[in-house]
Length: 385
Image (cartoon, rainbow, N blue to C red; front, side, top):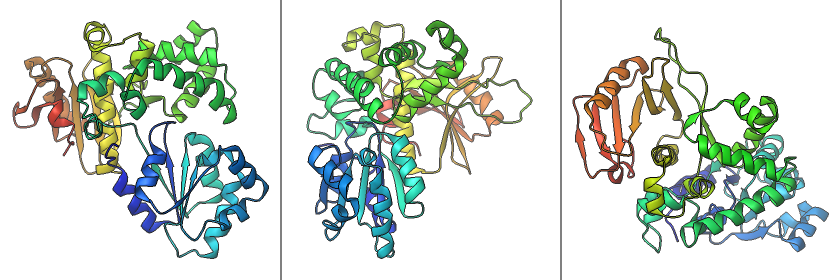
């Protein structure tokens, strides 16, 4: 079992809200997390045919049968009527918190049910794939290189990650999305994902993608929305500040899990990854995801951006915490190159950041002047202060 950094957040949410909704990609570990956090709660899987039939016939009665011990409802979006029933049960004892935990793999359906029926009664918590530190905490003691190659979904780390991801994609695209009410051709989505894998870490141009796929840029955007809502991609927005410079306004696009990225790029092992032309972009996405996953716990209101000017000055990741900004440059090689350091230092005043990090794969860390430091990933994976 892996030690999840979001565990304390989930337990704290249950002390403040009657319902806690945990959303995340399928197979990310939501059920394990809920059972670890609330071991005495009853558990009902709403995709199980018999359970689904009972909740479909009379959701209120099905809820009343288990309200005494607390209840975990898995794949809640499969039974939309359960949200209205939950509202009635919660409102009868409004002051009692921590009674229900709702799990869902499809964010659109779950969030819609929460927004329409449980507003003010629920805390939404997103469960990310494993960070490198979480992967190391498990029974296999995996290093960050394994996590980089295979990604952050627990089952993919335990065996042949490519076979696992192929089965996962087929299930998601051919079965799950239609069940969630998403109308999309699985073959088209597979082609789009493969193109995004080759674009990983680059600027998103929906018109260019549409031209290559034979559809409009509006169709591309709709499908990107779907892929983002089921946690497969991240569109990282550019940061804007009125500094009198021409700035890039297109988002950058990443596959959120490097295991999926490497599967689509036909990368099977560490040697192939090291020699692949997308190695640098893969490393950038891996570090961004690892930092953002931990940042969400340490600084819940922090926002992630990138920064790029038309002249080419760039920061791979900018963490905006409201009262401060941290600029992070990511390098697959050594990060103490004098030009990289100088460019990052000159960029800090433009984005209002008080300090900058250069994260690389080398060991240890070292200051590179007053505002900039080089941080090896083994150090960075423990947190961005």
